[in-house]
Every structure is written in structure tokens, then in C-alpha cells.
Length: 119
Image (cartoon, rainbow, N blue to C red):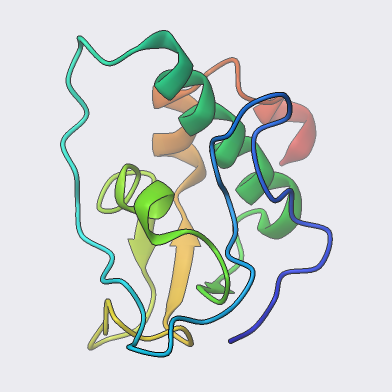
């Protein structure tokens, strides 16, 4: 499992996890699309925005390996802001490739980062 050095381990000042310390010996947790409802807690929305900002700062619009990125946090964005890059995509593989859709991310999280300056 690739460890993304320099990627924040969690949202600062919270327990919202962004990365894993070690691979699960039973296999990777599957990434699956989770529906974000309008009644989600503000703290959950901040965690999503912080994770999107970290993805953009670390990878931009380039493909990246899932590696030690948290499957739960990826699942909140999967199929919208984070898309599979591999075809076929294996949601249980630590080496699966993903890509951030900057247009969808900027629309969903306009305040997460300075999208114009980062492009």
C-alpha cells in the first residue's frame, strides 16, 4: 500500500480521518458511492471540503493511487468529485487509480481552495 507522504492524516483539530496507518490484512475496504444528503452535519461538510482541498493540493487534476487514503472519506466523494481512472476499476484494490474532477469539486466545494489560482 502506497503511503502518500505529505498528505494530511486528518482534518486539523478533529478526528475526521483522511489516511490509514497500515493496510488491512483482510483486504482493502471497498470504495462505494455514498449519498450526501442536505441534512449532513456542518462538521461532516467541513471534512469533505478539507479532504477535497488536500486532494487538489497533492494531486491536482492528475491521476493518483488510492494507497492509504481513507475509503470512507473517498466514498463520500466517489462518483462525483473523485472518479475511477482505471477501467475496469477495482474498488477493493489499494493500487486502484482515481482522479479528482476539478470542475465538479469546485462546484460542490467552492470555498475549499482557490480553484483559479491552483489550476
